[in-house]
Length: 560
Image (cartoon, rainbow, N blue to C red; front, side, top):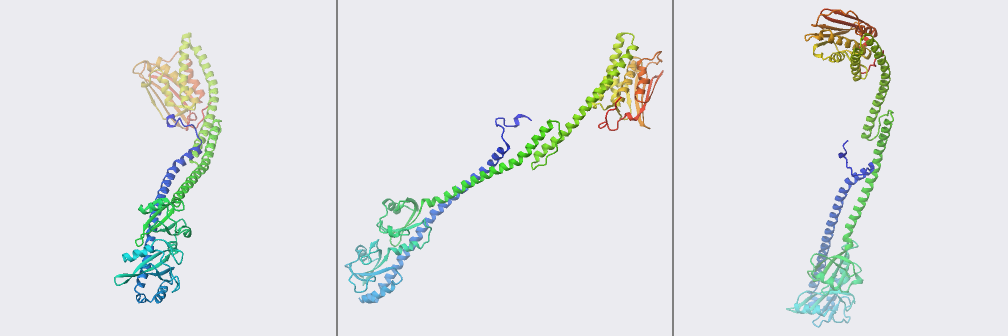
C-alpha cells in the first residue's frame, strides 16, 4: 500500500490510544457544549436571583406601606371619636385600648405643647412625660397632615419604635395630635413573615439612615446607622447593585422607598449565594467532564481489549502462515480480524497446496530430467548414426532439440500436466514458418505429458521432412493435420500433405522414419503408418484415448 496513505510523522500507537483519542474527539465537543449550557443556565439563574431580589424589596415596600396605611386609618377613625370631641379622655383611653388589643402598639394623645394627655401603654391617669418625638408632632401641627417618624426610643416603653401621627381638628385648627407608636419588632416580624431562604436578609432604614428593622439579628442591629457608602448607594442606586453589608459581607442589594414613610426597604443576598448556582454548574461540569473522560478511557480500554485480542490472534496466525502451517479462520467479535484471519486461512491453504505442488513439480522435474536426458541421449545416438558429417549431425540434432523444447514449453505453461493437441501442432509447424499453409482440424483434446512428448517428436520429423523434401518446399503446397475421437476409446491423428512435388519412397529409412513408424507408436501403445504416396506424405497414428485428460486442472501428468 502506498506510504502516502498514512501519516508518516505519527509514531505507531496501540489501538487503545487511538480509541481513547477517538473517544476524546467525540466527548470533548459535547462536554464543551454542556459546559456552555451550564454557564448559560447559571447566568440566567443569576439574573433571576437579581430580579427576585428587586421583587422582594418591592413587595416588602408594599407590605410596609399597607401596614402604615392601616395604622393611619385606625388613627383617623379614632380622631372622630365623640369621647375625644367631648374631652372624655377616660372613655377615649378605653376606646383606643380596645382598638389596639391585637396590635403591638400604643396610642398617645398630645396637645400643642407636646404633652402626653393619655397613653394606652399606661393606665389612665398616670402622670406622663412629654412626647419623645417633638419634631414629628410639630410637623403634624404645622402641616395638618399625617406624619411618619423615624426610629426613636419611646419615653414610656423605652423600646425602639416609630410614630404614626394624625391631626385631631377642632374646626379648622389642629387641637390635638393622635399618635400610634408601633414597636420596631412589629416590622421585624413583618420582614420575617416572608419566609425567605436563610441567606436572604431584608431590612428597613429610616430617613436618617438608622436601621429600623432587620430580618436577621434584629436586636443587634436596630438603631445602628447604615454605613455611609451603603446608605449613599441605597439612596441613589436604581435596581440591583453590589455592596458591603453592615455586617461586612459582600452582598447583592435592591432598595425601594416606602411611598408612605420614605424609608428605605431593602432585600439582600450574599454574593456567594448568587455565585452558588455558578459554582454548582462548575462542579457539575467538572464532575461531568471527569466522569465522561474516565468512562471514555475505561470503555476505550475495554473495547481496545476486544479489538486487540483478535488482532493479536491475527498476527499470530500470520506468523503461522510464514512457517508454512495451515490455520483456521478466527471467530471473534471483530469482523475485520475475522476477515483477515479468513484471508490468512485461505492463503495458508493455498500456500500448502502450492508447496505440495512445488514438491511434486520438483520430483516431476527430476523424473522428467532423467527421461529427457535418456531421450536426448538416444536422439543423439540415432542422429549420429544417420549423419555423414559432424556438421550434418549438429544441424539435425539441434533441430530435434529445438522441437523437443517446443513440446516442453507447452507443458511448462500447463504445469507439466500436458498440452492441447492444437497448440502442439502449431508449435511445431511454426518453427518452419508454415503456420498459414497448415490446416488444423479436430476437437479440443488435452494430451497427457507422455503423449505430448512423443507426438511432438513425430510432428517435428514430419514438419522437417515437409519443409526439406515435401509439400512445404513449393509455394502452393499445403499440409492438413486432423484428428478425431475419442471414438470407441481411440484417438486417430493424421498428417496429410498436398500440392507439393511428387513423392518418391526413400531408398533408406533414417531416424525420423523410425520415430514416425515405430518409436511413437510403441511409446503410446498404438499403431502408426507412414505412406509415401505420389500426391504427398500421409501419416496416421492411432492411440488409446487414455492419453487424453478429461479434467486437465486436476489430473496428474502421466509418466513414461
